[in-house]
Length: 125
Image 1: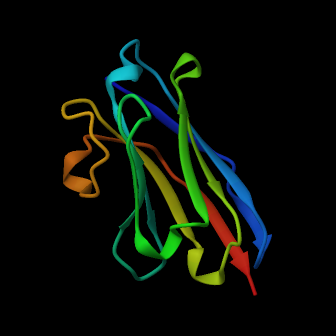
Image 2 (image 1 turned 180 degrees about the vertical axis):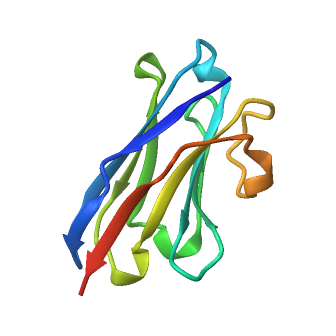
């Protein structure tokens, strides 16, 4: 069983920055791919970014490329999502997820079997 705990969300003005963290339990964290997804009120959950087991491969949705950076520190069982130049449309609950089977930076939520509780990100205009 893998437990994921997100933190770092909050309220920020447009153009500001936040860094989200996802801490995972489990001794095999280094073999998991980690994905970040988000869900705004009234909208479907959508892919944001993902990183493979080694950190050597990342993927992003087009609207966050150049603004968000995903990284991982396997020694700390932690994945980060650095977000800069935030926009009001980035407002959502952000979830991290773990894929313990494939280990690749997939963009499909069906590939991830473990999910955190989410952290709220609110960007004011």
